[in-house]
Image (spheres, rainbow, N blue to C red):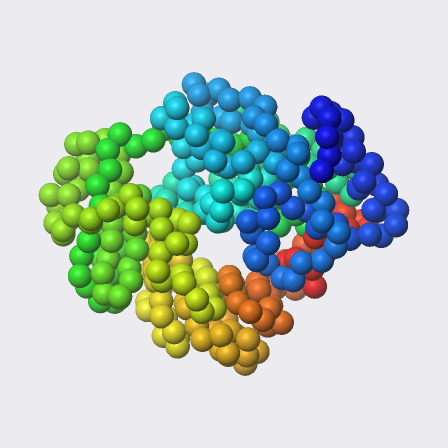
Length: 361
């Protein structure tokens, strides 16, 4: 692990990256290691980024926080909580060692994503160390500064394949004044129909989940709005609501135990998707989890069939968790999109040393 001041650590990072580029040595960028399971098989020498940690700036009145990549997510959330603020996209923690660099690189969002936005929507700026060991700054620390905004957003979900995210500035939001959660017993078809109807109404729905014949809703906002929505929607109060939504966010809910897991991203208005396996539906119908038999997940024909079915519904399928990733974790890219990806990779990492093969071959 690197030691010294933050400037010394950054200099050490740059020196190692330049040496790796010169030698063509693959590097596996790693913060807390809580998402090592995500993506294709890991390759390269471990490049530990956890020493480059600490909150650079936090302006509660400006709703912006800037932190170094190795900063624990728990530290950031604790600081925000002191000011009744939050990361509105509810990043899954997947372990106490989760870092903010990994949060942005993986771009995983929790139950509030459908109402609040995705990780990329909250990235205001970033500092990236490229394959030449140079620190490139994109975006800024205020919401009005949009210079380079698209580049900083590109880093969300890049899984470290474009370079080392040294620092990131994120928009934060106030914690809702009032929340209430409701449950309704209904079929999958009815749940999808209701979710789409409610999406077109001024209801403060901040999260939804359908599983095994039960639709759960979370309402968030001003007390008057939440109370009015409860009165309009009916339903029963959801017991242990905070624990329930946390179990979905961190995937400690019993549904996520065992089996291979596909994440199906489809338009919210898509009808029920008929596939073999148990499903759980979030984000108003836009995110659907499929727990499949391990043999099905590892079978190329079955994987292709899942992807064809989801593509026909206007979406794409990711093998989120599975024992065999030979079928490809991420949905195959269209040729034009694949070419853009290749050109971006070439621009930021010409020697191809950063997390090679983590997303695509």
